[in-house]
Image (cartoon, rainbow, N blue to C red; front, top):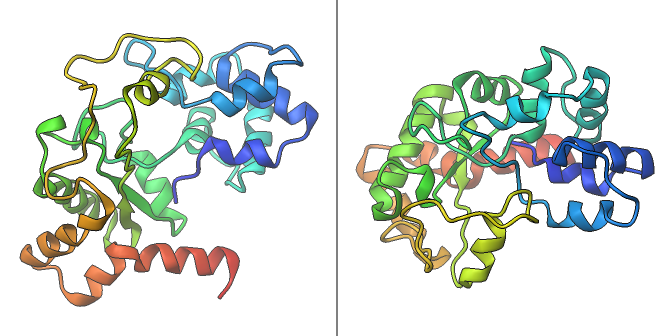
Length: 239
């Protein structure tokens, strides 16, 4: 499963919050802004093409990364950049499928699947091959790709729906660390919609139809459409 760095916000105490702030923002935060800025944190900025792991790992001690992984109930083994990648991971597709800094390299996907985890295929248009011209078929292409890479038991739905959000929401979402405004990427519209035929949650049945049309049987449909997530939740929280 892809664990959000945000999980640590709710488990961390005073010293860990300061460490988490430094990990997220690359600097020491003043006491009166640490909690406020962490609540605003939206993710790591694309630093001249570097991955989040490469950007964050600079200046962070190995022991500090292990503390944060412990707060997220994650494995603390491996190299430093692998551990930071685990800590910062979120819903995404394969980077080899679409070369976007937020999509994941194969080794990171393998780490998740190797632990019995689930990767939610992301339907947010910039993560798909046709961007904001995508349809449900392009989204299912991303699901197909993940299934080929990690197997049917490790792929689920991770729609990242943002329907009905105003332009101001995306200005905040796309800002650096949620606090520093940045120019919108080229081609990013004011009114953001999900792929055609699955613009809103009530149209998700189109994903099932497209998967079925591609030959997914009933057992595999159940896995992708929620069964894999349920299996993972039972393993973690019990029946």
